[in-house]
Amino acid sequence: MATTNAHTEFILRRLHTLAGVIPVGLFLLEHLFTNAMATSGPETFNSAVYTIQHIPFLHFIEFIFIFLPLVYHGVFGLYVAFTSGYNAGQYSWGRNVMFVLQRVSGVITFVFIIFHLWTTRFSGKAPTFQMVHDLLVNNPAYFWFMIIGVVAATFHFSNGLWSFCIHWGITVGQRAQRVSAYVFFVVFIVLAAVGVDALIAFTTQTA
Amino acid sequence: MSGSATAERQTAATTKTVHLIIERQDGPNSPSYTEEFEVPYQPGMNVIACLMEIQRNPVNKAGKRVAPVTWEMNCLEEICGACSMVINGKPRQACTALVDKLEQPIRLKPMRTFPVVRDLVVDRSRMFEALKKVKAWIPIDGTYDLGPGPRMNERDRQWAYELSRCFTCGCCVEACPNVNERTSFIGPFAISQARLFNAHPTGAMHRADRLEALMEEGGIHECGNAQNCVQVCPKGIPLTTSIAAMNRQVTYHAIGAWLKK
Image 1 (cartoon, each protein chain N blue to C red):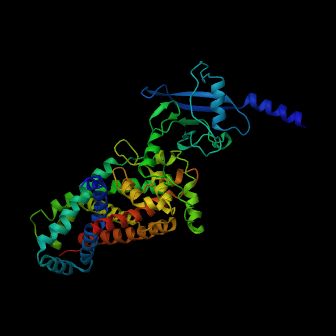
Image 2 (cartoon, chains in turn purple, blue):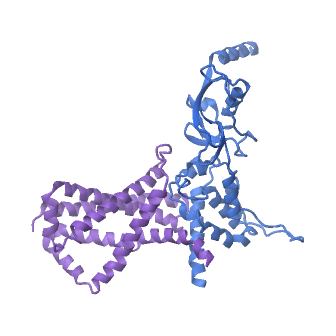
Image 3 (cartoon, rainbow over the protein chains, first blue to last red):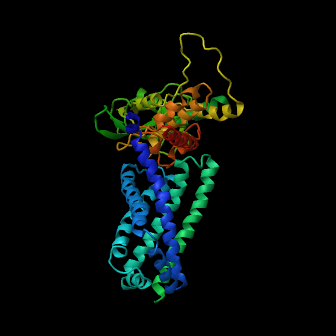
């Protein structure tokens, strides 16, 4: 299968953009949505977590639909960021700056997620409102690290959707690409606001 | 009247000069260095005229006699692409770079995405190789007369004509961040040319070959949507639209081909 070999890079790239949207992007939306429950109080958040924890085959779903695509998108993304050239100093047009920011926000998100998983999912502590509250209150730097992570992740997702639409041939014309850029910018503002709002709720409210 | 105008021009020519800072290189593997030149100003002159002046009197700004700066040129009307170089930080043709519209000192550099032969001369063969890879032509040669080809509808012809204005000048390849030593990206122009020949009724016979080529190493997936190409294209070719349109064709082709096997 010589043709398959010749197309390996193409397939890996397309799987990378797909993974970023379908499992990983959807999970990001779900995660932000669950976090937003914190704004209605600790009980609401804890009951949402309780529901998620009782999804059947949770570990299987978590591994196949979140962990694997996330690792693939992240590790392959680092390779993409490494092979890209950066010339926004010489060509400072908006799209080229976004091209750089997409890669920078990706690397920030990658580091953020590792630390985030380390301190929450793999910390051995029960995932409750109180746990998140303690993390945020005990160390003010942790709060700002979370803010940076949430903004970087939501930017990377929103701008990535713009790019995804071009990679898959959905937005073809110049106008479609321009309008979709505005739409996804609004998506970024909304998602970042939802994430930051939840962080504030976790910090200020007490269980 | 005309006499005084000539005198005025001569005075201007003797007092006004053009300051150039040129990135030079003596050979393909030689180190690069910058050299400054000051040439007499003439109304309406372009960068080519400056380089010709240096060739006529190869003395640098310090007054030292040096080897004249080499460059390539041919048509002098922005349709051959030979005189493409980086002028004040942007890739463009030297023939249409008018001194009056440029900020001085004028900085000239070779397009380093390509191998530099000498001074401002680069080897753009990789572009020809890319065009061969995507079969950017319409095969009509044969052992017998194939007869007249099918007609193209006017609506498609109009946008296809825009794509046909590409003259392989290399500006899009130079400005693209994803054409670098770590990738093998063929460049935006080749994707646009594949679109052009896929749109042609006779060229469409090789449509699948072109799409397969775009999926190979260095193909369309190397594009990262920085969109510098469309900004620097001297012909205003909608390169980013071409790339997205070919992304669509490749997506359908790839999924279709996989499902059929």
